[in-house]
Every structure is written in structure tokens, then in C-alpha cells.
Image (cartoon, rainbow, N blue to C red; front, side, top):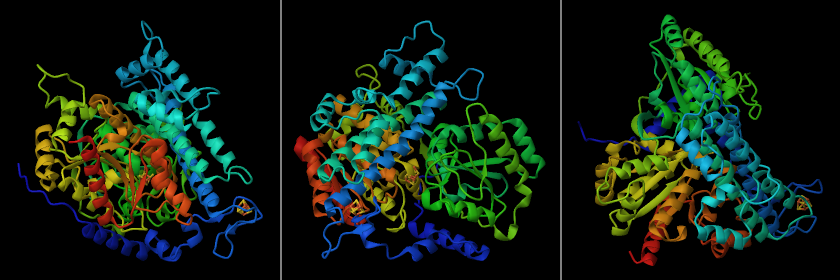
Length: 631
Ligand code: SF4
Ligand code: MSK
């Protein structure tokens, strides 16, 4: 086996994008590059978070001449209010995705479209929640667990039961700071109420509530999404796939699944694998059916089925511009409205499936638990029949792609660690081997790389360069969302990329047979990262804030990312941002989110839009944690 590994560079990716942009110009459609030009420079009041338009006396903007809005709101109040609204919208979005997953478990049955796949995980959760399992049908257990899970969203009293999984120390901190989350719906509504005209004006309380609503997502809605998806579709374990636009296949029927909720893509994958559909594809002159994923749906189906990943957020238009996509099927979140008019310029069929994401120029097929199989069959059939309608003159598929090993859930990580454990002497199913590597300094620490890509910076450059620098410094990476996709495009999910690591991490990658960047899943799976740091802290016997572990979102863009950043910080993990969180118009707000939250939860933000400086700050932060631990 050749050990030669060559990473695809950002320049090569940019050349592919430039070539596809030529196609866009040829067919007469705009892409994000054009729209960025049209929108630049951005409104500086919006950029700094000091524009308020929540009542019709406004909009009000803060300037040296006008330091208050008409009601008297200051820069700190306005930017704090905007910040909390972002966090609340993000928490609502993740959590509603999670709720849909719980509903699918509630609707699951032996003879329906949705089944219990990981019964061990279900029974474990049932035991955690005190649900009787002895002698019961697995679906009776599933329905009772799902009902409890659904009630968590709107329970009238008490706190999110998922928070009981955190360390004792975290739970006490949350109680002391008054941020242990109640029901998700309650926290989102409270955030909207607080930010209505004439309610809270104290910026500190906006930040406190942002931590709380974030926690209701990370230790509530997102955790529900992850757990229920694992029970329904299987807990991910390491498996091989490929990533980047080169996974599109000229000889196959290409169907893209894009969005977040795996309820749709799981069905498409199942239907496409049937003999009936494969035969139909061959009848139409194709060699078969190539399902590929985009954004977080890619992460979901890659880690459970080895489905190939076409790329991340800013790659969605590129994928259609290849001219070989017969159908793109979306569920919710991160879908460019421009997919509608863009698909009209090609033979591509565009399907929307959720009432939450209705988009012009799409065919809307509302997918439910009862019709999921038929909807998926209709989409796959129509895609196959569309194969013959390609326009050869518009086709260009970039060749770049890399091997990728994905699916490092907490269970997947422990399964790898068990392989380097002496089973006669040591306990299995723990993080101890990893802890030993960190204590001894073979691995210096870990970084959770998360978030989107964003044209405000050079897309993917920050992700890739930061990751390369970190692994070179023996810092292992866990990645989700579009950060994981960026890693896959550069080949950093390929085990062979260990050649880019420092000596210590390279040795660990060889012994445990892992890549230096561990793919942990989609955006809701950042809840897996919370359980990972909690498990490590418990096995180590220290607090989460003491771990040489940080979060990094160098190119974040969505409101979901604001919610994520809040629950990561609230879990005691310092978070490094490469995009400004839109509050720079208020010094008080900036000081609070970078320094002030440390008093409440032991962590805060570090913000630097220069990726080279950001990575140095991360390394320094990890080394500082090591020093404090005396290791
Ligand atoms: Fe202006 Fe106050 Fe109304 Fe905001 S709430 S738009 S600052 S008057
Ligand atoms: S898909 S939220 S662009 S990571 Fe989860 Fe990517 Fe960000 Fe969407």
C-alpha cells in the first residue's frame, strides 16, 4: 500500500470553483461570488450589532451623535438583544430538528418506514429515564421514551433531563449562575420576550439567557436529535467513504441529499439500493445510482452508510453547476434559496420535503412518517428518468476527492481506544488510553472544529490551515458540520494524512488506526462532543474547564452557530471564533463575552479574524491548560 499522501490545496479547490463559475456565467445564473460583490461593503451598523428594528419607532442606529435609540436603548442593550435573538433562533432551529427526530421514534413500528435500529442505545436511554423495559415489546419502550422526549420540549416544571448527564461540577455551576435550561420551548419564548421592546435592557442578562437558551439546545434539543437518530438509523461507527466534488459520477444517476434531518435522506438511500431502482437506472443507460450528500445531511448518511460527501455549505451551488445532478432533495436548514433558479438552468429536479423549508422553483413533496417510502420512491424514480435529459455541453466535474474515514461517535472513539487497551489489565469502554496520551504529552490536547464556511473570510482556508497547524503540533481534532467537510476536501479525514502530524499524534494515529481529524457528525452532533468532554473529565477526575480542550469555529455563519458557541462555553470549553459575533459596536458586550462569562462558567470567547494568529492563540490556550494541570 502506498503511504504517499498529497492534500488537495485551497488553491486547487478555488480553481475548481472558478471553472464552475464559468459555467454559471454561461448559463446566466448568479452565484454567491456575485452576490458577495453586490452586498459589499456590508452595513456597518448591522455588522457591529448596533442597528435595532424591533419596533416601528425605529429602525435606530447608534452613532457618536446618537448614542441611544429613541426609547433610550444603548449600544450594549441593542447589540445584546440582537445577540440573544441569534442564539434563540439557533436553539429553536436545532431543537426543532431534534423534535422531528423524536417524532419519528414516536411513529416507529416494526412494519412502518421508521424502525428501531440500535435497540441497545434505546434500552440504555430507557433505563436512564426510568422507563420499564423488562418483558416489553421494543416499540412500546420506544414510544414511551419518545413521549418523554417530546414532553421535554414543553414541560411546565423543572429542567431539561438531558442536563443530568453533565458532571456534578457543571450542574452546580449552571444552578449557581441561574442558567440550567428549562424546556427548550420555554427558553426560546423567554428569550423572545426578554428582547421585545421595553423588556430587558441589561446586556449581562441577555448574555446569561444566551448561555441558557444555548444549553437548552446542546443539552436538550440537539442531544435529542443525535440520540434519536442513533436509535432509529444506527449509532455511527468508523467507516470509509470519500469527499469533495469528484465524488459525482458522470456515468451514474446522481442524487444529492442536502440539509440536516436524516429522516428524508435515510429513505432515499434505502430506496436507491433496491434492485428495482438499480435495474431502472441501468435501463435508462446509467451504470447505477450515486447518492451523495451536502452539508450536514452528508455527514449523517456518510457516517451511517458510507455515502459519499460532495461538500459543504458554499459548495452547494458548485455541485449543481457540474451539470450531472439529476435531482437535489432537501429537508431543512442551510439551503440557498438560489438552488431554485439555479436548478432551472439545468435538467436538475429540485425537491423540498418539509413545511419548514418551502422554496420557490421546487417540487414540494411533504414527507411524513406514513408516506416516507413513497415520497422517496417518487424522487428516486423521477431522478433516474431524468438521466437522459442532461446537456453534455454544460458538464464539468472537478476531479478532486479524497478517501475519508468517518463516524467517530463517542461509541466509535471508545471502540478504537479499546483496540489499544490491554484487555487483561485495563477496563474497556473508557477514555483512559486517550487521557494517558494527553497526560504524557504524546498528544498535547484536542480541538473541536465546528461550523460553516463563510465568504467573509477565504472559504475553507481558515478551517484547513488551522487544522493542519494543530495536527502538526500534536493536537488531535474532532470535527462536525461543514468544518468536517472542509477536512474531508483537504484529505484530513484520510488515515494517510497522519504524515502531516507531529511525531506524537502520528504514532497515536498509527496505533489506533485513526485519521488525525475525527469526524463526529453533523451540527446537532456537537452534543456528542459535549458528552465526549464530559466522559473524559469524569474518567480523568477533573473538571471540563481544566481539560486541554477548546472549541473553534473559524468560519461560522448561522444563528445555530451562536447557540452552539453559547452551550460550548457554558460547558466550560473556551471557544475560538474567526468571525466576529456582530456585537463589536458595544465594548461592554465584547468584554462580557470574552472575559465576563468566565466568572459564571469558567470559559469565554477568543476572537481573531486572522487564522494564522487564531491558531497560535489556540495552541497557547491549550499549553496554558496543560501548565495549570501540571502536565
Ligand atoms: Fe429604536 Fe428602541 Fe424601537 Fe429599538 S426598541 S427600534 S432602539 S425605539
Ligand atoms: S450545515 S449550520 S453551514 S456547519 Fe450543519 Fe454547515 Fe453551518 Fe449549515
